[in-house]
Length: 98
Image 1: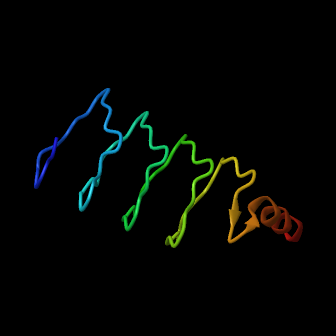
Image 2: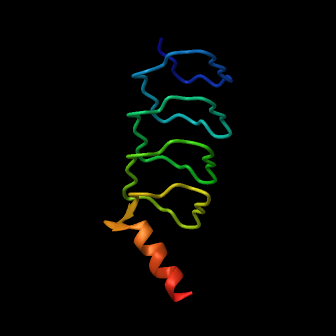
Image 3: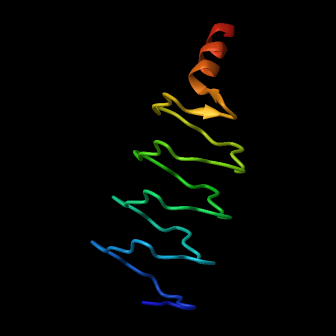
């Protein structure tokens, strides 16, 4: 199925849209629940004000992103790194200085 210049609301329930491509698409104010995004790629995307709750981002990569003002709370960060530095080590060093 190919949609071009569609301006209607789309509701998809119990759908398999694997290997779909979305280019120059406005999905602002969209809602996603129980979605399988494994292996998906987001490139040149505006996610300002994006909210992520109760998701599995293990082994995800974030590169060349503007993370200004990002808040991370109540998250498991074991093995996570920023520019190759373990976040666990950064938090431990910070807590020792506080």
